[in-house]
Structure formats: structure tokens, C-alpha cells
Length: 131
Image (cartoon, rainbow, N blue to C red; front, side):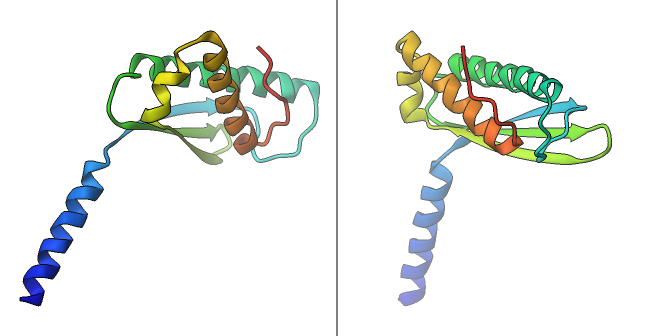
């Protein structure tokens, strides 16, 4: 009897875990910009800002196109340098808050800023978001 209860419990837990669906999106970027560095030059800041803004735009546009879906979106950003170094940054967008992000320009800018800041901190660039 206990085995059947355990088996039923296991099935329910497994079904619940797989019921929490997430959509994973992989974005790959080849870059000459060093990451995980404390480099402080105008060139580094300009190049990394432009790259991170482009990535932020990619995430924003994809999220906007999929704002009505029922699952969270997990972005896996893969950076590969030409010297062979790799960096993975994961960024998730919650389905419950996604609809509100696109309800006004102010909230959309807040979404972009939060996305930029997350990637910026992970990439180790110190330039704040300005639109």
C-alpha cells in the first residue's frame, strides 16, 4: 500500500514539475570584447555598451512577439571570444509580468533597463542604461 502511495505521489510531483513549462531561447554572440574584466577604456565601454544594447533589443523584440504565451522565457546568451573564452548568461522573463511590460512605454523602458543592467553586471561592464 505504501509503495502505491509513493508511486502516486511521485507521478503527481513529476506532472507538476513538467507542467511548469519554460521556453528556452539560445542566442549566440561572437565577440572580440573581453568579458569578466575590469578593463577601463573608452573603446571598451563604447563597444560593450553597443553590444549589450543590441542584445537587450533582441530580448525585447522576442519577448514582445511572445507576450501572450503561457510559459516563462529563459534566454541563454552564449558569448564566445575569438581567443576561445566562453561565457553563459541566463536571463528569464516571467510570463505573469510580461504582459505588463508592454502596456506602456514607461514599463517597456523599465524592462529594457532591467535587462541591460542584468547583462551588464554579468558581462562586467559598468555603464548604466540610458535611452
